[in-house]
Length: 145
Figure (cartoon, rainbow, N blue to C red):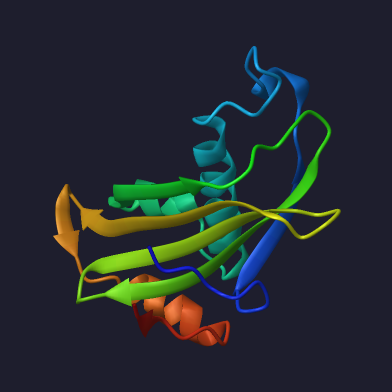
């Protein structure tokens, strides 16, 4: 899985672990990390001027087709952390979100992720031009990864 430099990202959000997100071991449940990653992706789309709900209402959906997560260290209750992303593309259809979860207090990499998505319209894959255009207006270039 490709990782990226901590400074080399297009977007980040700051979150804090809530007690109920942890399992009996006192660490964030592995499935919760996917929620953090997805929340960051949705906020990123809002940031570049895309409305996820409006896209869906227009018949366009972003569908995750592959999720690769490397768990490095666990987050614990109360930890404050960043979720960072860098957008890329693979071929004509695949949109790649390289993402990291980094603990704020020491910049420790907790999770490294590569989320592969495609856009669909009426349940058929379409070119991601609508996203690429919004990214370009925001000054973000989708590079081949």
